[in-house]
Length: 235
View (cartoon, rainbow, N blue to C red):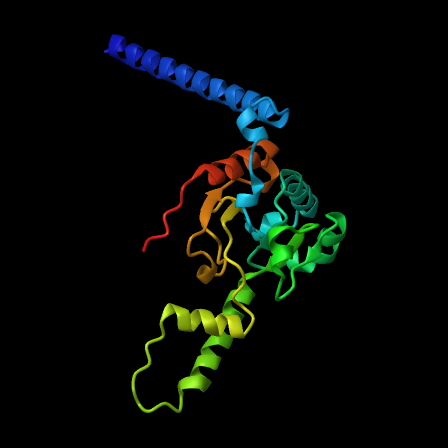
């Protein structure tokens, strides 16, 4: 009986030691990789083509969105990589309330309702859009009211509200917005936290962990992986 108990305890301690060693080796590997990527030792990351990310969305959990200095540093990294069209989102609108500070610190400008092709494809500076969950709700309400006023006096036929009709309504009320190519989520939740779903038809979504634990190398890897993925849009 005592031999069996001793063997079980010994086995548990050995397994615990092996798991601890595995996590330690894993941490060392990722720390070293992060350092090497940041220093530019990997050619594939140095040749990254940021033009494939025409519009980047960054979703931040509202509690972490209060860390404005972290957000600004993240935007500096994004700009250094070469991505210039960015949408910042948090549910409660914390980032919206601090947009003047963020824009000033990042030498950016707010996104206009209508941007020229040149501004979108070859922006001279960082262009920021600030979105919260209220924008999504407000957009739905405005689009619904528009469709109701447009079709309420119909001939009695049931109108089928197809995706193009709804997209047109959202565009007319100024709540459509461009679809992000890539959406990065910072925070504990692995979801888009209420980001307007009609803008996510073909968006690649990547969870990046907590904002405080962000790393420049992780950002480069996420954007690099997106640029190497072949997206299938169906027929």
